[in-house]
Image 1 (spheres, rainbow, N blue to C red):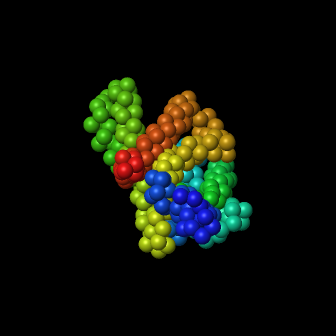
Image 2 (cartoon, rainbow, N blue to C red):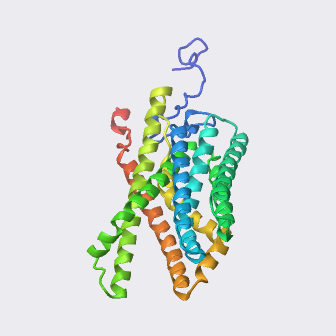
Image 3 (cartoon, rainbow, N blue to C red):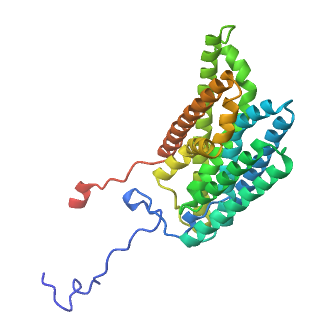
Length: 336
């Protein structure tokens, strides 16, 4: 049949096929949403910011209470070095959560990043002022104040990322894991007895290693679960409000699940750079303190690695279970 000018074949418009919208299942994948779309908004950011600030305040207060209750400056230095990692991690989460809440509706990437850094700076300055006003005036106060402020600024800069939902899931997962670690401290002694801690030093070290591994494993599981639940909730909320099931791709779930471990490792980097003076003071108190600080540093790195991998695998496995079978074209039917 020839294509004459008046034929129906020639009358068909020469237009490209309509492209699938965000969340279209036509090719089995989810397209990334452009900037300014609902994918760039993190739900519940204000609640997360309030909870993170409350947790940071609680960590600063508990650290101050422990230091001021010490009988002498030597004990205060050891307690400060021991409590510093928890404060730094809380400052990272608080800076990220507050910056996320402040920039949640900003569309331009540059403006979003600058505002996020500014919000983290405000959190860091507030924390540093609180430390200087409420802590005793000694050599450790400036170290705690400075490293806390730096961590909050770094956390704010992380919130300037384009995909705010991943940052929200990361912050929520890290906060949940840190709360669990504090609650888990009540179970350390019973677990040590369960793992065979006896009168010998070797049995106590072996039991402590198993308790630490158990804590890291459970913290990673909680971090991965919370990260997945947050991102899944964000997807369902976007589908209800905007009519598009825009969701984060699998690398986003992987990053959010691994985020708690990444922040723990970042905490160690901040401590070893900004808090080096405090760690050296604590290690110089005695030979036993030097061994203890070395062991604590190694344990924190191992804990961060465990939480990173367990959290990432947990979030990725949970996300994979939600994927249905990919649509396959029936070539026989099409040929017939």
